[in-house]
Image 1 (cartoon, rainbow, N blue to C red):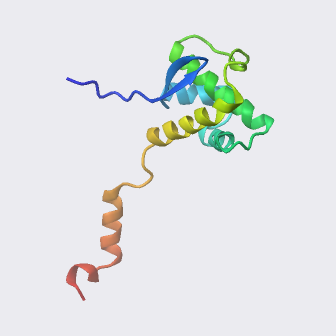
Image 2: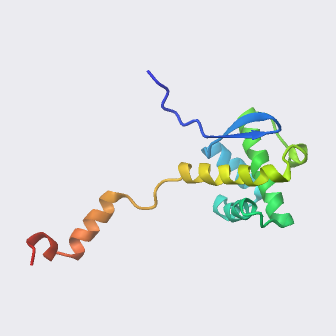
Image 3: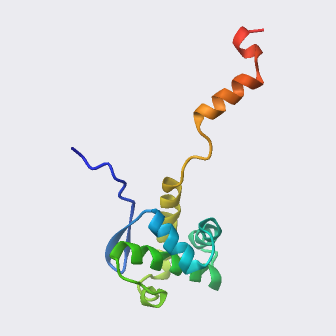
Length: 130
């Protein structure tokens, strides 16, 4: 029988491969290290992915990476420890991987069942053909 647990998005940092997955533990670690909600950190990651970086965006990016590495390795990883591991050319690829993992990890905002019920109530003539 195959393992159905999600594995995350693979990313290479400092020559070692890690799997980025937004688990509850990872989200909690990110929020603690960045001192803000996860949804408030993601725009900074998106700007890093677009090469539009200022010092605050890069700081947020490193905090998020450090939080993931802390959760993945089980040892506390400080942002200073990974500062030299990620080259500027790799930042975009890692940021895109973070955004993809974020997209895969979050639930869909609308479910199809709710939408179909709302549509049926809004247009009663749809059923009768009038």
